[in-house]
Image 1: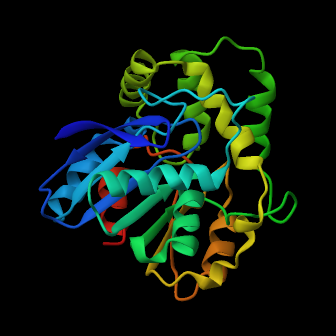
Image 2: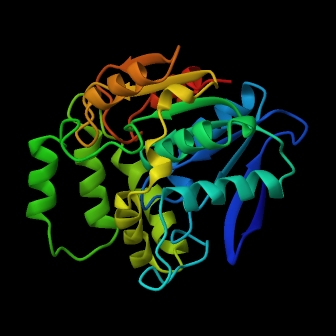
Length: 275
C-alpha cells in the first residue's frame, strides 16, 4: 500500500494504491462529500485478492486533497471527472476498471461517455443517471428527508454523521455502528477543511450540455449494483440506468441501503464489481 499526492491542474489530490502495480487497475470513486476511506478497507483487500491493484482517492474538497474556493472557482461533474483522469495519468494507466458509488457513479458514467478509451469496465453503485432532471425519478424516501429536516442546524461531527449513516443504511441489514464510527473518526481527523465537502452538493447540481449525452453511447461492460432499501437514491434510479445503458447488468441487493456499513456487504460487493 502506498500513498501519493497527484497533481490535477492547480490541485493536489491524495491517492492510495493497494496491490501489485503490474496488475490491471480499478479506480474507486466515492460519493458526495466522501473521502476515499469511506470505501471499506475489507472491500479493497477483497478486490486485490481478485487480482487487481486498487486505487482510491480523496475528491477535491475532502480529506487531504486541495480545498477550492467554490464561490470564485465553481466546478461541476466534468471537473471531478477530470480529477479522476489526472489520477490515471499520474499512475501511467492507459485505462482502468472504474467503480463509482453515488456521486462517484455519476463521475464514472461521465468517463464512460466522454473518455471511453480510459474505461475497461464500469460498476455503478447506488447511483442515478447523470444529467437526470429534478422530477424525472423518485425523490429520497420520507424517513431520510425527515431526518435531514429534523437535524438541520445540528453541529457537524462524528456523532451527527453516525446518525446519518444509520438512516442511510436502512432498517433491514444490521448497521455496524462501531466500524462506521471508526471510519468516520478517521475521516474527520484527517480532513483539511471538513466544511469544504459541502461544495459537492452545488457541484452535482450544476448543469451543462456534456451531462446530457445519451448514456446509450457507453460501450464499456457495465454492472449496476443497487440496494432495494436505498433511502437516498431509490431503486428506480438503478433501474433507469439499466434501461439506458446497452447490455448493462442490474444486480439488486436485498436489504442494502445507500452505505456499506453492514457486516457481509464488502464480501458481497467485491463479487459484484465488474473486472
